[in-house]
Amino acid sequence: MNQFSDIIGQDQIRDHLQDAVKSGHISHAYILSGPKDAGKHFIANIFASAILCTDRQMDSRGMPEPCGSCISCIQAAAGSNPDMIYVRRQPDRKGIGVDVIRAMRDDVVTLPYAASHKIYIIEDAETMNAQAQNALLKTIEEPPSYAVIILLADGTDRFLPTVMSRCVTLQMRQVPEERIVRFLTEKLGTGPARAAACANFASGVLGRAVKLAADEQFDTERREAADLLAGIGQKSYADLAAVAARYAPVKKKSAGTGDAAAQTAPNATGIGSIAEVCPLWFRDVLVMKDKEPAIYLIFSDRVSELKRMADALSYEAIGRIWDAITEYRRQIARGTAADQAMLVLLTEIRDQVRGSLQKNVPVQ
Ligand SMILES: [Zn+2]
Image (cartoon, rainbow, N blue to C red; front, side):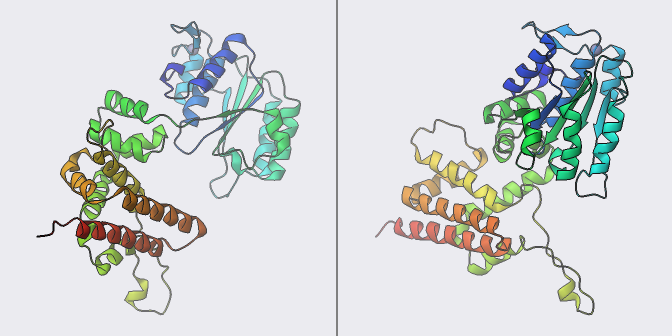
């Protein structure tokens, strides 16, 4: 069974929740906010299990942990604890509607089945519309003493201020890269270079790194992207346009048109986009410009290519590439078609690299 000690990189939240269980000062409503795959369910489950556990254990710091072997813990681990209730949106709905919250409200008034508390975990809580939130408000304003409501959300922007003010908000943090690397290498047996790459792509979200480590496509896409960037100085405009075309949005099949119109362009998957690889590649190029690199390389398998690029590119040229990456992101956020923005980015990188290589060719 998972315990508080299994939570990686969210020490503040762990301590807050363990304190609450230990002191018995458990709030009636929590918002646990963090990106997808950050581990919100994981933490909410451990917290709920610890509250309901009938034989809590103490860890080495004297903090409570669920025992993992009482009936309540066994049921919680199996997802069948009657006092731990998941509130989910209906699959065909965009968000959690008021009917779902009203059903929960009707259930809250029933006493716990076996435990001292009854815990509701609301998934995708940020998708509640205003009506649903107002319905929820009635419960969290005057909750029964045994009720604990945990809202899991990608962010808090969409919550009404009245809801926010009734909840203890726990914001998940980005997990430092080295902790993710350690987790992947020690717990999952991922090789160090791959673990470093996964950690980097995951932007501090542990669950995302774990998924990447298990994704076979990830290695292929990473290698393809590195191949492209290592040799980008020699690419023609047509080559780059072909790469960028992979990021074109999938075209809808329209009636009455030929095969060409019905063709669909493959959407980029896995690591998502070469644009995400670019900053990592040029980060490594910057690292290689140091005579004695102090930090590890993400592309540790491409040292000679990185070195060649580091020797050719000035800091100024790398700065311009960085600007191009920033501009690409701005364009994507603005809704520019991904293939167009990608082509502009790749062309700018190509021109910087090509210009630098030419400048640095030794004159006879
Ligand atoms: Zn237990």
